[in-house]
Image (cartoon, rainbow, N blue to C red; front, side, top):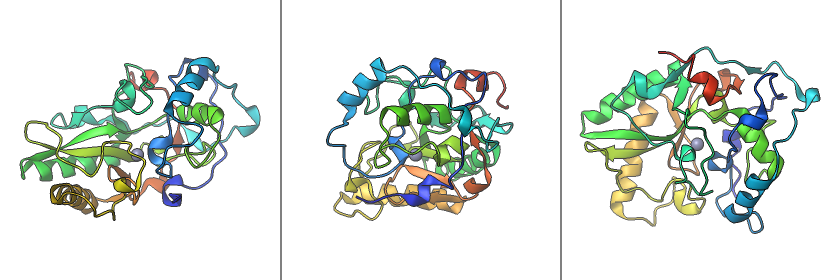
Length: 259
Ligand SMILES: [Zn+2]
């Protein structure tokens, strides 16, 4: 099993912010960007769905309060900044490998303004080639990650909330390539395919999938993104380490994020 240490980020003590009630959050799935590619032998989506539906949200741990979790003031709804971007937040639908809606209806693709502007430049470049981006996951509240880890405390499959994911910093994005009509191009795998086939060095693929993967990666890298080796769809902002973890709810971001 290949660990993706680069994606974990520095370890930080985390705490639940008062007033951001975990109980009101949708459950979250953190495996999307955390690690090994195979399905867990004993904790597959079916079992996890059962857990998500029956286990109450864990209480906040006062001992884990930390200043490293902050309220983001520079989050932006990327689709409002750049309306030509296609957005399909898969965790806001049942079309994800849990088969459940895990984000509220108010969820949008929020990223740090710096990250959003870089993504906008990628989009402009791709549009000149008759292509574009479809965004699949962006900012993910830390409480979503924490709740899920409480249900499945296995770092092989779920990012440890004590480390956090760069998605929790508003500085990572999952996306794919689309044509001018918004139709997804052929890629090595579907989103959230946790197998070696999703690795960037995997080459036993149709030439078209390899070419599209390379084209997407090159466009992202040119504008300052760092590709995750084990997931062709995941990119970190190259300055993500400077961004604090965030745990604001989507419902609250809907009222304050710029523009
Ligand atoms: Zn990701």
